[in-house]
Image (cartoon, rainbow, N blue to C red; front, side, top):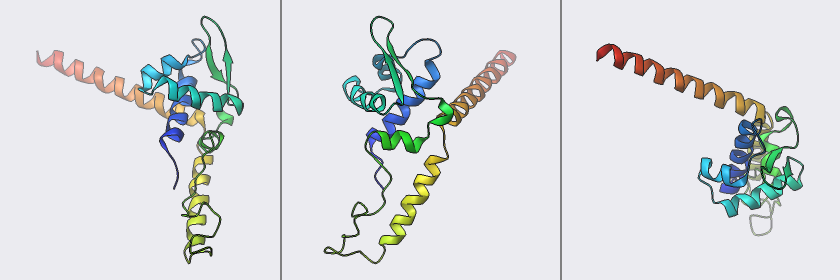
Length: 155
């Protein structure tokens, strides 16, 4: 399977933008600081996402990036594909030439696996990632509140 750091960072950047763009357009530097990603590397990724229409940008002071489509319409599969990656579990890149120019005996298994993984990623929208992130954050805040209450009751 070929899901590199670039693919993971693209999904991370899109989620970060979707979580913060309601305040103002999100700069590469803001994403870089929050997500601990090199700004230069992130700039390349964000540029590809913009060229594919997944992001819109605003120039100047207060500029940055916002989603180019609704979070409901952006899937993880689309994000990964937009930066030139896809899900391919074959050794031959899907060319069916991995066994000295011929298809290996397990080629179709890996093609099927690739399709299953891509189907899974197509079923996950940016909106669902946002909901999950916000729910986990709320659960974490609730846990911290409970710990604080317990600590004050003990002290």
